[in-house]
Amino acid sequence: MSKNKTISFRVSEDKFETLREIADERDLSLSAVFRDYVDMLVAHDGQVEVVPEHQLNESSASTSDTESFPPKVEVPKSFVREHERLELEAEHLREQLEEHKRYVTKLRQQLDEQDKEDVVQLEDLDGSEDDEEASYRLGNFEESI
Image (cartoon, rainbow, N blue to C red; front, side):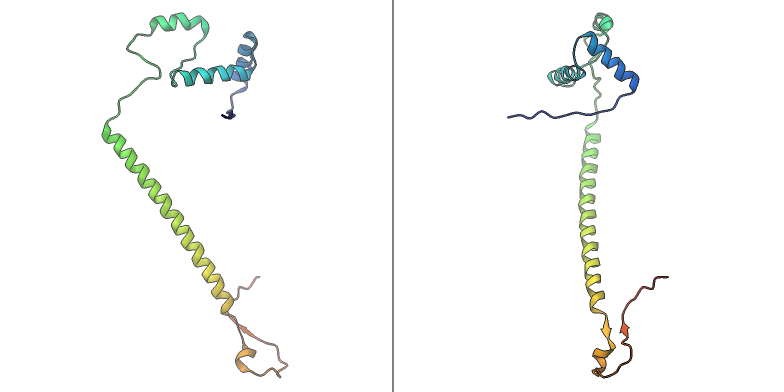
């Protein structure tokens, strides 16, 4: 069972009104216009050019057999290989970044645990519980001003 997906995008108000007029002329909803366009785009492997109907005959007559839409450009294999190498390097760097983030998080957790253990009560060291003086604590304290 295939599920339909929703595509969302923004257009200027002028273009939206133009699209609405096109849909009204053809007695279609805007959704139907876009579904037809997407279906045509998929059926022709992305090689679809949208032209006004009055230019349709002119466009097909002026387009030679050597031209195709979209235009194709030959890219050297060295460029493709370099691009692939850079993609792999970027992926590797992302993995290293994640590993470093996990390591920093682990170190912070250890530091937090050690901070809790560093507090020593003077009473505990002295062993005398009879003193009625205020107890003092040693450790790292941040003073708020």
